[in-house]
Image (cartoon, rainbow, N blue to C red; front, side, top):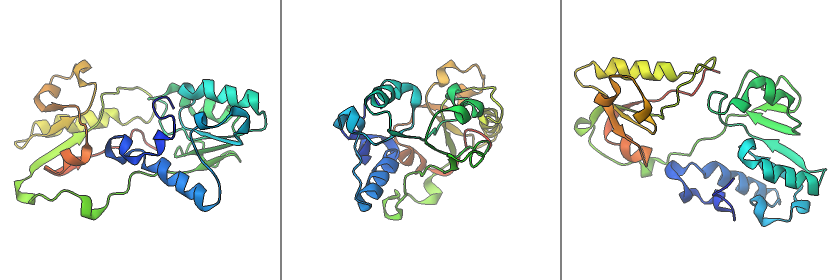
Length: 219
């Protein structure tokens, strides 16, 4: 993935909220099994025996280069975003991809084909001793952190998220909304709650008693 070459994708501190921890742990698992795992730019294409990727559109040039150099390479795909974020991840399309192994949270296709297995991608581990401490009584009431990504795709929960903001903004205590893209929103109540982008979710959420979090889609 562009921006994470030279093994930067394994640097847990390289992205907000320890987002890259899953890749670090994957690499550690390979090490325990005497297998080497590095970003593709660290190898000659013909020397790659297994290629793991999670963003096929932004990795297509690498994938084709590796396949051309080594037609026997094993392809493992982790489509972590739903189709309303990446339309290419429509279940019908994913099921027809010439992939050796696919690991997905999507119940519509998981275990429906021999090479597509159910796998809930891990989220960063929250260590109790690293949770910021603030007296509960001094915290604000409630917040929510999500980006403005409207969609009409089946199963999307974007509208439920917006309905929650609408409900709580009308309550006496209100609600604080964080995330990118909300400048494009035409919901009249959003400016009353919107506090801007969020660099670190943990640092924001420590100031609130409650936080609303929805999955992207029903599954």
